[in-house]
View 1 (cartoon, rainbow, N blue to C red):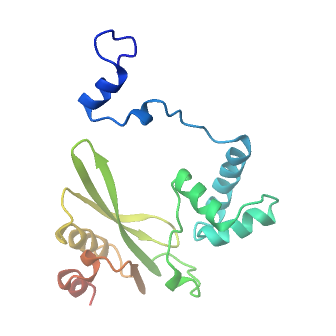
View 2: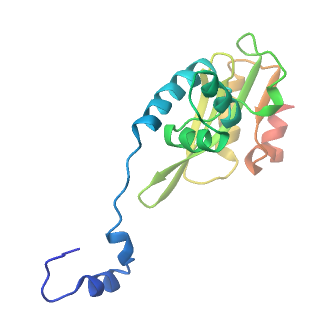
Length: 177
């Protein structure tokens, strides 16, 4: 955008570029000092308690003297890029040794022209990544390959994943059984 352009007004430049003019004047507000202190403490909490979601994170931060509700904890956890390592279903099971429970999940990696998809199989106790695969599609094949590779290295008592189509697909579930 050329603000000093004598031939094209800002309005016309925005029209040509299909750019919302109000976005031109938006200035991002950084985190407050208090939010930064909360993020620093949240990072410490997460290292000690990686299973905490926003509700339990909020409770722990309150215990440590920070006034943080679950909604604020959720938004700050997003900024920090953390989430509970294992889901609710394992909450009442004490994971006390390697290879007792594994988890699998897919994450999206934004690229210039689309996404890449990374699946990882992780030992919940040690947080060790047992295997991983990357793909440019969300087909089931790369998840199956990661699972086969992980099972060559061990066999967990519990295997936890979300209900995504890749993990509920017959090809994937038949490997586990």
